[in-house]
Length: 472
Image (cartoon, rainbow, N blue to C red; front, side):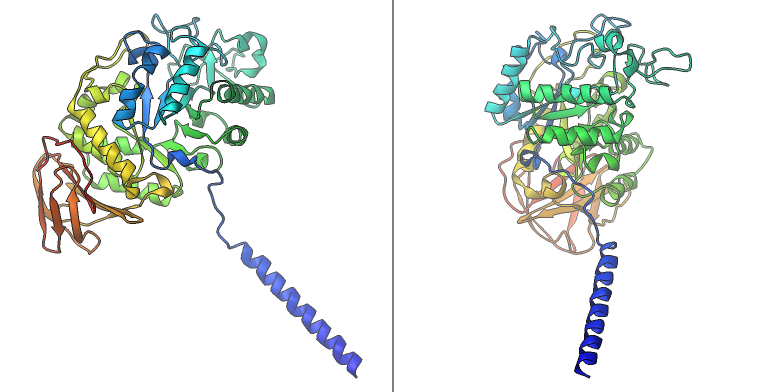
């Protein structure tokens, strides 16, 4: 009897154990899994980006001359310098007299136009000594026609229907030819080349040209191999969630710029930005850095200067690019009020001068560095919409993180707007980030904002020096 009872209890216990195990296994299928598997470098959490076009940055157009400007960039508030391609430029089918930096003739050499390998090392070392980081522009999708790989490894290149080398289809990039990433040896060569600059020069990552034209699994492996050397920052010239999982810290926010252009040109109202911010929060992981800015080498050369593109709205757009969610960037010359389209295939040095736009950027970068709510990705606070009584013209939101809180109001219209706000999130006592005046918001507070004006309020007093002309 006791034996039978013992046997029955064992069977019952086994059944219960099996059921529990089955339940646990089944439930695990419903547990959320982290989408982002990479780790951002610690130094990127509140950083801002500066794109440096070596050819146009100084009258000499060299690394040595650019190095002399590093103290100025540090004072501006720059953390990361993105150097446009530093490699030799192809001569076959070259555009203009100097060619495009994105037509790479050799992936492991320095363009003599800019200086020597030792000059580049000195630039990077000086930046590091000053607490800044340097990433290189990398062109993995294609090379120059006369890159030595075409002759030594012709099978590494894509072909058209006639069996001939071909530029990227549908574009006018006649000075380059595409690689074929189905070739493992090409992948190995390109990966080893990217590792070379980190080991030899000590760079801190890459901005990857047309990253979406190259297979994601290639980038995923590149990131693993680079991180084995040192923590790197990877920026993709692309706008896609899948690149954030294992390869890239940051992708472009092209759609933000597109919506801003529509608003400024009267083709849309503030609700167009809701589309971007909704997708950014709902479709992209919280860890995703999104690059936002008002100019880069492409827009300046082919679309117009920041003044042409944004007109009277420029200061507000700049401020939103730093205060709103995103990883802010500045293109060289903006801080000097550059008002010309820099030539792309020729020498066209920037004319440097002190300018209010530079003061604005410096003030905004100071605010960003010191206010955790404005930090990047998961390190900062989400933008939370604060409804107002002019929803088509005025964008208002709160960002909060830790002990920091920012309340920002932007009039993105050509008429002055007087608004009050709804819901309790904005309530409280603040300091105007620019005028330094105290401001208390209650349910009945009204705020008047001039055309294309903006106000940024913080819960502590930050010593900012910029006093934009369109502020109250």
